[in-house]
Image 1 (cartoon, rainbow, N blue to C red):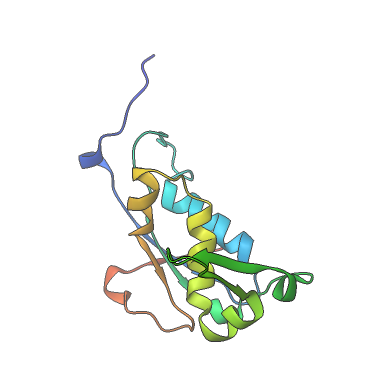
Image 2: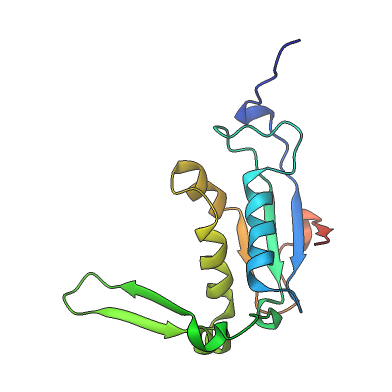
Length: 142
């Protein structure tokens, strides 16, 4: 019995919609990262980018459990001396919920070429409207 290795040209990519309304932010991001990686497929190979496209809608309605809204922060450095920035997730979810979901998914993907190309297949929207109806995406249930 031989093992089949999928090639990039042979990969069939589908489109999936994940509805984040009422779902925890981290669980939604984990499911999206698994789909982007291709772990739900039978012919998953860790060294080949075989994932699918993901559309996440209703990010503004995603919930953070416990005290994460006040105790969790997004921290980044601008590159300038003394410019360490810090924003609480309460403020981030009010102003830019798409970015909160984006960085949650990005943190769950590998930090290499496969992770960077997988992030190009992610579309994130704050409400239920999206621009990818022409691709005929399927609804993914959590």
